[in-house]
Length: 302
Image (cartoon, rainbow, N blue to C red; front, top):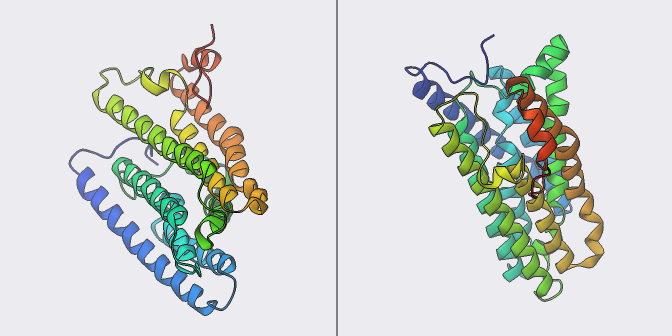
């Protein structure tokens, strides 16, 4: 197997990328249709249950296409695509219509989802390009790879994202308390998180495009203050959504389990995995790990 992190030959790259994106569009169109059918069948049940079942059905359809194409990265954009229709559905069933708080949450979720999906699409080379973590899982699980992929790569992230979205239910579905200072704080945190993640990705993309030394690592901008500022933006985004739910109805404070689970995922799985990857390719990364904060942007340690 060729290195999945390396781009395909220049001559074939545009065609491979175009064909891969077309395959993803087909997969997600089928997933949305299947999710809508499942949701319609359960239309008399509670909207949270309807969305959960539809989300699971959509995940199963995307998994089928992952198997069909032999590439679990077909699922990658699901993280940022699925929240948009879920949030839109919850807002649509609100008995009092869409208020200011709900409109703001919808706007922020959509902006986050569209930007993150576009960022993924701009970096994915096609069906011959699979996330290096999936390649490692494939190597460790062998014949059991696809059951492992179903659970760890498809279903578990879907569950994490759904838990992260739960705080938006009280903010989207009911008037709740009038918008106030906590909503302003929520908008600032959520919008700021989207901006941090966007700037981090932009700085990385520019660095990758202009660097002359293939072994060089980005050590400027937000990346000077954090080894993974894009992950910091992602984690903070989910806490911002929780603040919206808290502002709407403090009884839903328990939904902090959502952003907390996503935080733990990044801190104990994603960050160490990426650091190991960087160490294997850039030995000097060990010094970076000692001096630079892993997640929260912070002045460097001496």
